[in-house]
Image (cartoon, rainbow, N blue to C red; front, side):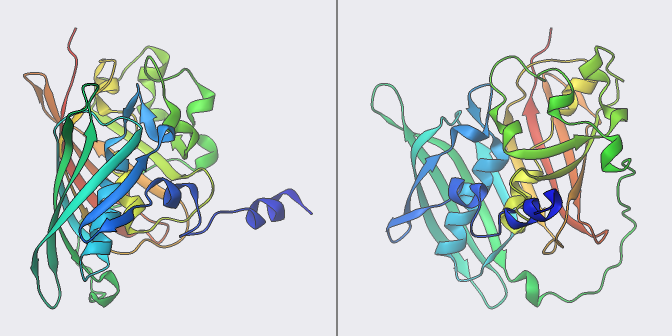
Amino acid sequence: MPEAASAAATRATIGDSEFDRDTAATRRAPGVYDIDLSAGLTIVSAVNGGYLLAVLGRALGDALPHPDPFTVSAHYLTASRPGPAVVRTETVRTGRSLSTGQASLFQYDDEGNEVERIRVLASYGDLDALPDDVRTSAKPPAIPPMDQCFGPADGPVPVEGSSAITDRLSLKLDPATLGWALGRPSGRGEMRAWFGLADGRDADPLSLLLAVDALPPTAFELGLKGWVPTVELTAHVRCRPAPGPLRVSITTRNLAGGFLEEDAEVWDSADRLVAQSRQLARVRLG
């Protein structure tokens, strides 16, 4: 079998992929879900914030009467660890077109005390029921073709410690935002990349929640190093993505007092803006 045909034959599908297994939530009781947080989606031993958003998003999608996340706002209270966790959900309001719920993820600390890791408030609807009119001034990011971009295997490890998440993703970064990897950060708070899942699974609304927080931090291009933990992250899912790779653009304009904001846009293969986000993150200075 030709190599391309073989790759297509083994391509993961939505519902049967690493991402689906990593975000699987088992309902223990109404509003209570067990989850095993994957060590494969960690950076510097901490669980990626976008992955956590997708985990809670999946539980809320089961608990609420509408299927798709429209807006998800999360506060990251303590660092999550790989391993067992419990998600508790609550329905806040249901309507004809939107339903709203909240969810929290809990783990046990070394002393056996239950600790809340992340708390989410989200509104869900049906993306397929939205009108198809688009009136926008937004434009897709100008990223070179994928074969002119570079992935984690093409350069040094971006941060000290574990970067296991890079094995689960297919990232190809715009060379114009890779100065940090060469010891020559541009000073511009920009990061752009082609994004996909390593097993070939196409994007869906839940994986968009991962995509908005999966690129190296913009702080790297500002000349800073190390982990950049998220304090708060709000993601908007605008439409169901078309099959094919995504383009992600992240920018920051203001680093002050040890915190910066990051604004992300995610574009699909049909040149549609399918997700947006803003987060506040803490940076290590000096």
